Length: 312
Image (cartoon, rainbow, N blue to C red; front, side):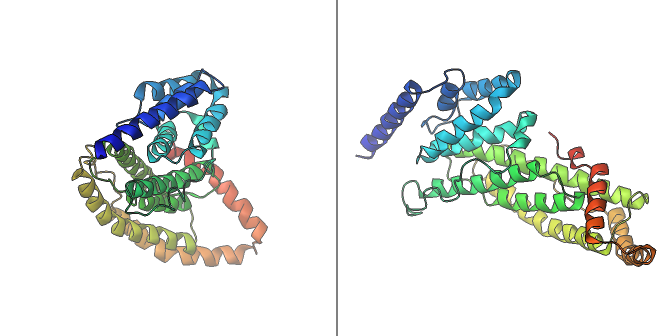
C-alpha cells in the first residue's frame, strides 16, 4: 500500500509539472523555473538552475520576471519539495554574484505559515517545519542586504541574529534534497561569520588607530557583540557536529566562527574607558539635535560602507 501511495505521489507530481510546463507563458525561463523546482524530491535540477543564473547574467532585465515566476510557483503549491526548491533557487542567487539580488528586500511571498494546518506528526509535518525555518532565514537575510543604511556594528548584530536563524534549520533524516539544502545553509553560516569577523576586526582596527571616535552606546554595542559571539560560538560547534551526523559533508569548517583575541580584548577594554570621555567632550563642544545625529550617522555610514564586508 505504501509503495502504491509513493508511486501515486510521484506520478501526480510529474503530471502537475507537465501541466505547468504546458501553460508556461514564456518558454525561455518559465519552463526552466518549473523544471528546476519540480516535485522530484531527490535533488535540484542543477542544469536548469545554472541555466536560470546564466540567463539573468546575460539578460539583466529578466531578473524581475524570473523572481515573479518563482513567486507564482510558490503561491500555487502546497508541496514541501517545490517550496524548498524555490527557496534554494533564490538562495543560490545570493551566491551567484548577481548584484540585482540585493534589490529584492523582503521576499515577494510568505511561507511563514507553510503547512501549519497539518500536524507536525503528519507525513510531511517535519518537512513543512524545515521549509518555514528556511524561509524565515532567507527573508531576514534578503532584508539585511537590501537595507544598507546602517552603521557597521548594527550590521554585525543583525548578522549574528541571522546566524541564530540559520541554526534553527535542522536536518531531517537523510532525505537527499534536505541534505542538499543543508549544504547551502552551512555555506551561509561560514560566509556570514566571515563577514562578521572582517567587519568587527575592521571596527577595532579603526578604533585602535584613532581613525574612529565612538560613543558609550557604541562601546556597549561592541561588548554585546563579544558576549553574543562567545555564547554563539559554542552553539555553532554543536550545530556543525549535529549536521555532520546527518551526512552534511561541508559541516567541517569552523575557523570563520568569530573569536576574540587577547589584543582585541585590550582594545575593547580601552573603549569602555575612553567612550564616556568622548561623550563628555562632544557635549561641551556644541548641542547636537536629533536631526544632526541623523546627518552624522549617515555621513559616517558613507565612509564606512557595509559593502566592504557585505559582498560575495
